[in-house]
Length: 552
Image 1 (cartoon, rainbow, N blue to C red):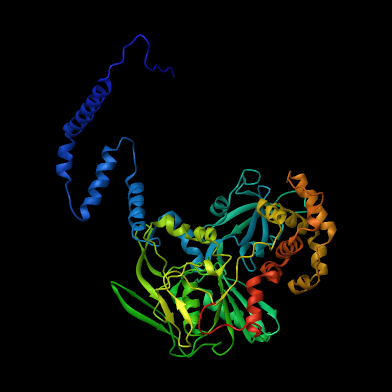
Image 2 (cartoon, rainbow, N blue to C red; image 1 turned 120 degrees about the horizontal axis):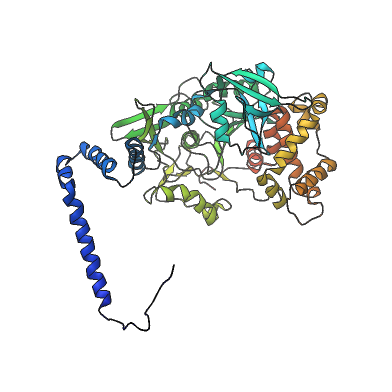
């Protein structure tokens, strides 16, 4: 575009800016009067409204008069979402098309074909068919690659997890055809799978970490969590468990009822677990009953900045009753209770109706007055302030001090503060290993390696226990990974960095173990160098004395 500034043959007029201002003002006024002189004043008078009708009137006005075509339904949903988000960070609107995706993890099941998968090299690769699921019953195996779904190519087309879910999930009883490439088979294998209910497990793993000490990791508090816990507990009890590590790290919560039921397993009859209270909901106290199966045994609970809501109810109940040692880092800080209202069109509203309080009376909800963005960025602020590495950097509101029956000081107003602080481990893996992991190359290599050697590996290692105790990643495999990475244009400076890279052998062993034996091998191998678990074992064995008076 050509521009012209102060042409030399045109004298400068000092009043020109004033003229422009007057013209601009007149233009605005003319536009205003023309706009409301074209019949819209009548519209406004006809739809003048107060109270509940104001929103509907405004929506109608926007739909009819907005410069572009806009859907009233879409506008209504955005209005509802904005309205709820203006209340607090956890009140929310769930559109009908997202309802199942949001609620399935808490129901404990969904309808689908029943496979665990990864997308590697733009191909859907089956890690494991879920035992008893429709795919496993048809003979679909770990290592199979899904090439087509209903005769539509899904390999090499930049498929995403969301698209995979949309193609493979569906109502129970419906059919989906998948075409699979299997190692050693020249042609594609076609399977017609009848979708069915697939369980979603909330206990990631349970096993004995050392003689007498059991370990249970819970990822969410869903409808099936309590029953899953009882099964895991009974399995470990048969193996001689006398002490327990309950891992709630990264557990974002779930149902209040399930958190209460789990806490009841560890607390004596009559001890308070939690209470809730809100404007329209009088104080309601939840207390332990007589049915607890682990009320007198030693217990530790692991938490971190990802532990929220129901996880904090459990940790808070056990801490406030002097029942367990809490180990890790300060939890998220969610003390708001939501109720879900299902709407007639399949959508739903989750509205905050109360706050929950731990037995000592503390609400651990962190502040949200600075807006939702600041609220969710608070975890980043913790990282930048050094809180994840140094307990002295924790932002504790020391005006909200409470004492447990045993005299221990606990704090409200921003998460559960652990009794024993364990910093974030930043040196578990070398920078080379971290870069390999986040690039996806080490996962892809381990999947291919397992796929090529699956039969031989399974003949040598009959179960996860045998694999964990006997399998060793050799230097030959390390070199093969390095060569694979070079072939994928992965940049590194050393000639053979993998031979000395910290944590690489452990990570490879865990990934190969997962491809063979799923979580039963994966977590025990990764946890061998987990600092929180190491600290928990020391506490349970009496090697660390926890101060009963104050949080260290």
